[in-house]
Image (cartoon, rainbow, N blue to C red; front, side, top):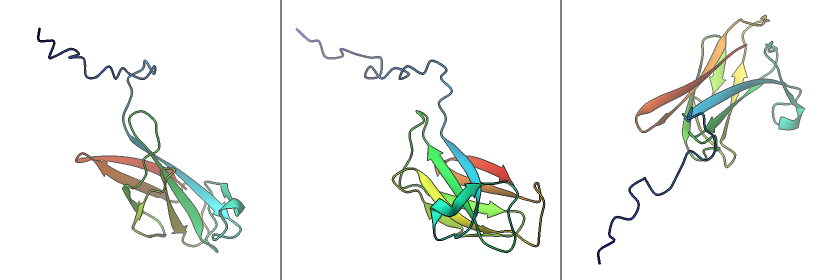
Length: 130
């Protein structure tokens, strides 16, 4: 009468229709220049960032299925200027937001920002040149 092991395929969770099986978590980095850093709607995507005011850096964390990941810790580093805070938790939309202060007037390609989050002992990073 048994019937114990009905489905050995992993619970019927197929590749969700994607087909490309490229499913790896990722961090997408966007740098934004802001009229007023406290008002996100005044920020627009930019790679040439002004030095005279703070700039917004957003990290979007998604899982292997491309879905936003909330509540994970993202670490931020830059090789030019300063970024705060050093670590941030993603919000309900998978976004971690940082403030980047560029050094003296710079041109595009003056530096880069790297955001990293760790899942199951593996680091996933996103990088953006500014």
